[in-house]
Structures are given as structure tokens and as C-alpha cells.
Length: 184
Image (cartoon, rainbow, N blue to C red; front, top):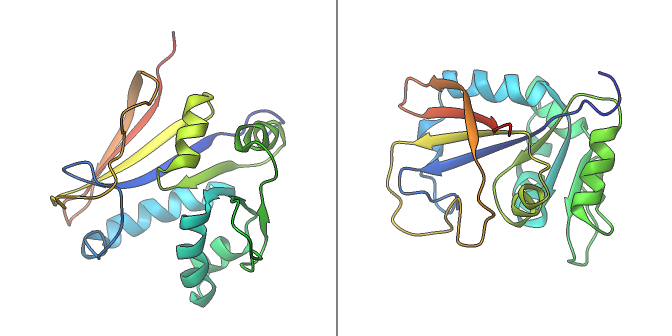
């Protein structure tokens, strides 16, 4: 890709009642072959990840133990972590973001490369959305009501409009809705 053409893609699991917090295992039983195929497609279209420290900790505990093509891709791609917590980032190719997350992502978008993936939808996603830096959202709606936890869009997000660019459903009942920011 040419410089300045990179896309930031947010990929987020959500319950029917809007919960994104992955406490418990409500999302795992819905991860089937269809979900795996889409996750692979999205991951391999990216060559960098941006994430907050909480997501980093979960991923860093799991991915280094995965020894397949997907795991190799996740482990080897550059990871940019928004964190103010002390402690080294030991997962391969991980860098702490110094300064503004938005400025770092603007710089990454201006460099040549593939997509930049953002997993989850916490404070990092909010900062990027507030700065108009998320180009595409994949919202994985799971057929379950969790009842409590962190919600996808909480009070205080700037109003925004989106265009539906794709839908997929998995055999387990997950609806993956893809959106881009509406033009104009």
C-alpha cells in the first residue's frame, strides 16, 4: 500500500445487551469455524496492532503459547500499547506508546503498510474515535445477554454516523456487522 492509505480496523465482541467486557467465557462457546475464518481474514489484512494495557495483558498471556500460522502472525506483528503502568512489555514486538495515542496512530496511518487492528473497545478506541481515526468497525454481536459489565458505547461518545458495509453470520449465531464512518 502507498503511504497514508492504511486503515484502522476495530474488532469488538459484544453481547446482545451491549456488554464488551470479556469477564467469564460467554464469547468462547460462539467461536466456531466461521468466526475463525473471519478473524483470520481480518488479522492477516493487518500488519500492526494498537491496544490498551488491559487487552495487552490478556493477549500477552495467551498468544505466545499459540504455535500455528495465526499465532505466529499475532506474535510477530508490531504491537503499540497505550499504557501508563510500570513494567516491561515482554510480548514480542511490543512498544509502549509515548505521548498521544491519537498522534501515534496518525503517524502509523501515514506510513506504508497494511491495516492497523484494534481489538476491544475501551479507552484507546474512544480516543481514536474522538479523533476520527477508526476507519472501520467489526461488531461481533453474540446471541447472549450478559446482564452487567462494560458497555460498547457509554455516555460521552461524540455522535457519529456509520454506513453498513457488510454482514456475516456464523453457524453459532454470531452476527458480524461491518461499518465505515459515513461520509458527509
